[in-house]
Image (cartoon, rainbow, N blue to C red):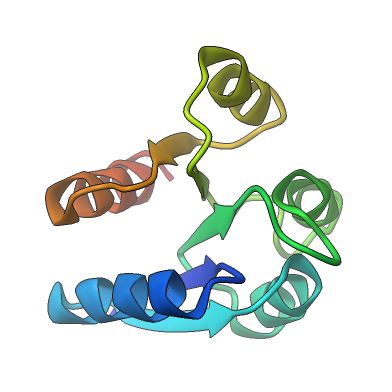
Length: 122
């Protein structure tokens, strides 16, 4: 079973996303911020990471920098998701090294499509 790490500071979004993934046959791991997410990624080696951009402590772009500079995590595909869907924000996340970008709110189908795209390209 493929595992997906969800890094999101909002409890409802984090748990709802985890539930959607589990109902679709994935093992969902969760973390409340980028620092805890980085620790989880190193420990669990998920197949895909879904990460919010705007978070306290360690934000999504800082998290991306951490995982891309760590030998054991640098190859894990990363999906950013954020309520900010301005074209420059999307471009900034993708330019920083994200593999996919989802705008909140997203549909179940959009979430699963993003995960499957990352799994198939990884």
